[in-house]
Length: 175
Image (cartoon, rainbow, N blue to C red):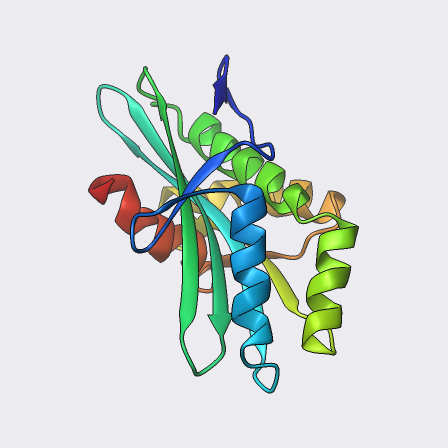
């Protein structure tokens, strides 16, 4: 959902799974739990990330990716359109990072504790930012990773930020 120039996530935010079904965040969370409970012997990595595509408007896609390491994955996407082009790179990356922060905070302590309990150990929770050492975004690495670290998340950047730089990127064009 868009509130002014800010992406806002809440329990009513609509996501799509990879089959195209619409789900609210509570349903997404239940799907994640079901996926993890179906194979508790595997390791899991939950990552969040956002990417955007700029034309006459700006399309943001925020993703939740649940990787059963070495054995598949499930994913959920939320698309939001800002009716203006975001041409300033710092503003664009800041908006992507803030959207991912809001999405990450949807996984509150109670939800993470329930996931860990279902798994019998801690799940890896990753925060992916669409910046990297190559290209124009390299000047923003320190700023964005500092903001994310300051809010108690561990940031991943390219080439390790696949949730933002690959998964979300694919759907900014396809949705």
